[in-house]
Image (tube, rainbow, N blue to C red):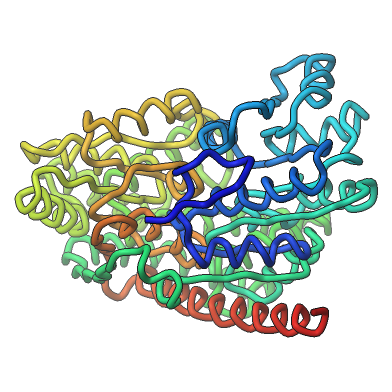
Amino acid sequence: MEFIENKWINKGVIEKRAYQENIAKTALRANTLCVIPTGLGKTSIAALVAAERLERYSKSKILLMAPTRPLVDQHKNTFERLFRTGLEMKTVTGSDKPEERSELYRRADIIFSTPQTIRNDLKKNILNLENFSLLIFDEAHRSVGNYAYPYVAKIYNYHCKNPLILALTASPGGHMIKINEVKSKLFIDNVEVRTRNDSDVKNYVQEVEKEWVAVEFTIPLKSIKRYLESAKEERIKKLMSWNVLHSTMVTKTQMLKLQQELARKKKGYSYAAMSVLAEVIKIDHALLLLETQCLYSLKKYSDSIATQASSGETKAAVRIMKDENFMNAIRLTSELINEGKEHPKMEKMKEIVQKELEENKYARIMIFAQYRDTITKICEVLKEIRTASPVEFIGQAKKKGKGLSQKEQMQILNEFKMGFYNILVASQVGEEGLDVVETNMVIFYEPVPSAIRRVQRAGRTGRTQEGKVVTLITKNTRDEAYHWSGHQKEKKMTGILYNMKKQSDLKSFDRD
């Protein structure tokens, strides 16, 4: 095995890989968006580019930004391992006093921070980016809307004497508009993309077997579904008779947008329509939980609606709890739970995990689920397996809910790494960036319609050893629609990115 030789980089720490060196060369020529799967060394590429910029501009500084404090700390630890002593590296957070942050910016050669802290300090003139020869934006797909990244990039591009931007992501999105927005907001000239199938990458990844496991809705669950659909259809028809809706096929996004439009009108009928729409949205969410999650999650949600109704918090909740169809659905849900019944995906998931642990007692498994109540239930079910040690891995506490602090998240990841747990049951927080130990198997409890999230989830296996990705799908439900939507977006994204790379290569050729 050969290693990178560089005066700034420690010997024997960055393996010599052609694709990393080629991407770094491109990134040194102009602002670059680097799209490579999780586990293929985005941080190593960033380090190579940083080392060259420090060599070229010896008195300049480097800034690396990441969305969360644990991710920021992770990057700092990696850079400290990669770079030779003599460089001062500092983490800057909002918890540091302004005068302390100002001093840290002045002293440090390489700074690690969240973009929110950097944006705030730029606005308060605590920080000046004039002498930063490189800005690294990790999880660059976030550079849309009002996120802090675009503001920082704009100020940097305007004030810096020798600006260079390196944007890193495993997946920038499944739509041309979204990818172009990321490129535009970060002033990107070049696109470098690699997938696991590229010739210069294949030697560094293992085979990943993908399997889609379909389960049938049970007859009792179909009954619950019919009750909820009847309650929803009744309200949809009412809105159509009021000319508020013009089709029975309406998505949650469309309903939320319609609510905003009605709120702006501030008329009597619009308030009535908004309230009925609120009922439709609540019932549709109950349907989503039934189809894609589990009875436990549905029961917890119906309990929250009952609490809203009893307190008079919303009129929509009061009316739903008086609806015969909705109440029949909840009654049947409670009866099934009391009988020990659950969604068929739960039993199938337990069966898959048990088989994997029987075949490999050292296996590490990661299970992704969208909702925290589902994650709780998954852990409860898996604890019935003698050799299973599952743990919940969720984000920080939300309003009226449980959560894990960033310190607790890092502790769980370390304990998973050391083998205290062999199954990590994660929400979306487990998808992005964090250095999770290699897993033998990743299970999608539900398909996701997002290309970004599909790529991030699947990237948790198949790095140094063969892996497996299993997706659970409930037949004839929105699970199927989400699966195919995500699949098509991922395929489309790869095509768009390779086309952009081809255009970047042609521009580079013209310049040379």
